[in-house]
Image (tube, rainbow, N blue to C red; front, side, top):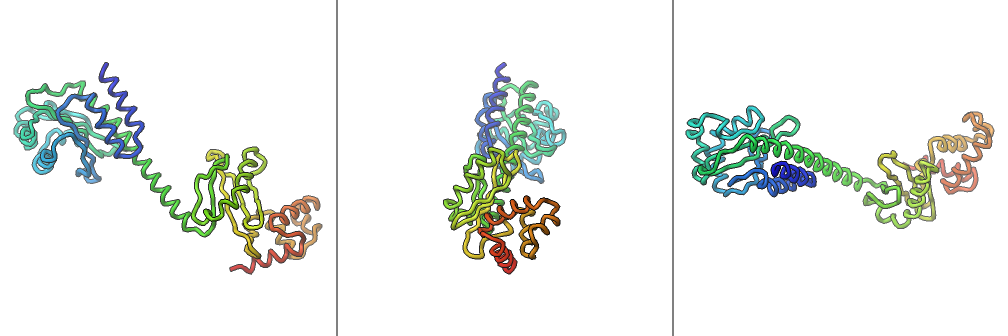
Length: 329
């Protein structure tokens, strides 16, 4: 059936539309094949039910006349709003009531007579209508065309709902990027292949220096060897964390280095922070092993990693780094 093919074409066209503007264009491009009419439109309504936007292939004068004299006395529109179902002029009211309605005069002034409307509904709320008009010497709209209009309106509602979600998520993403750009902390999000997804303004000057460490972290994460890595060189320290598996991404924090500016506590794990603190308190390896309930060899392995991350070579230097960090405001 031609109408079935047109419905499929309309659904496919709407599926590819991401914004409301694209949805409206996709609808108006395909709907003439679905329902023959001399005039077509899509009214987008605001929360109060008033027209917020209209896209139509009729004259601006007709649209203005409809808003001025026709909308308030349109039995077809009244039916659609009351029942949330498609309807045409022959089924919305008796013929005499239709011919005496203000909208009938407006339609006649533009060469139209028959009217068909269907509700566009999102989450149970009427957010718009699709409209069709034919001349007096045209046949009235059929039941099959009413059904087609209802299906088209349903598809349009789903597309608008999807577009609204997309636009809102885009707004949230834009807000998040703005917030991240205000942070002094340099951070980078990459995929698991090391390609940059997001880098805030603080990270941009440091990207070239941090890139080898970020790439190495991504490789480690892909191999499943760790979930957190720290890499250091003369100018930066990079701490990378694997994000939950469903995101297939890595978050890297970049710290410029210089003297006591190395962010000791940020690059150490909670356990390493605890051991470094015990070292600063003067505890021996044996005493730390007893407090931590681990072997002395485990403590020594922790200390090796702490020395590497803190860029120190012995306990005395580590104690200095701990106290320098504590003095930072």
